[in-house]
Image 1: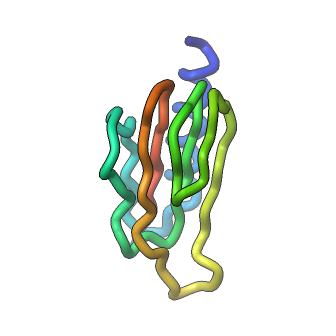
Image 2: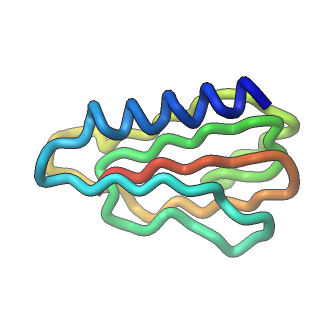
Length: 97
């Protein structure tokens, strides 16, 4: 539980420190199930996997605990929608628009 709290604090700090005044940051715990996705138009997405089993963008993960950052490649570009499925564990998503 302490690791989960530390990861959440890190994500909040990261979102605050990397967001410019014209950027919005949204942090949420992804619900269990399929058919979910991070919306098109983000400039940066951070997936925090905590004992996570499921898929992100078509890649499968099994009981993984890792940070998975996905930045747009260049300034001014945005990411396409990123689908995910949560089977078990926790997936915390940080979106920057």
